[in-house]
Length: 165
Image 1 (cartoon, rainbow, N blue to C red):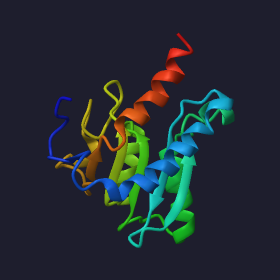
Image 2 (tube, rainbow, N blue to C red):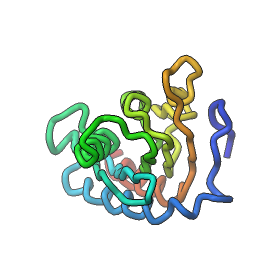
Image 3 (cartoon, rainbow, N blue to C red):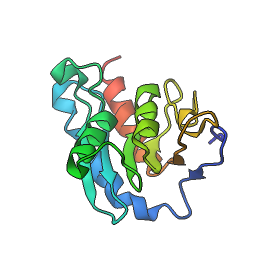
Image 4 (cartoon, rainbow, N blue to C red):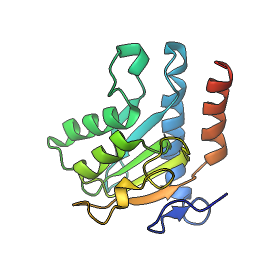
């Protein structure tokens, strides 16, 4: 696998097992997208104590909402749970590398870390196509841990898109 983006984010392997239970929950949320024809992406927001405080899955097709991405919905739920928009100390765990919209939301919400499964070589904004979350010009930078359970996350997406081609 080729190296992605600047900023030296952690790669799957050493030190990422701690994220796997949350990625399992994100994968379960992603599977809930399939009956609705939404791209299977799931996300959870975990606070500093390891508690899930926000969950989301893609609902763009189901709701007709262009912002209905798993990450956005998980961030909204976490902010509601906290009673405020600042999500410092939190980690977003998602099955697919966030796009530019979602990466921007991570920065704006002051999330500390993003952990994801599959890299998105077409629209990823955490090291693949862009690296918005670690841009030195941003007011806040997000730690990136990519490729956790990458094969499983990628397989779900490949199956989804393979059925549509």
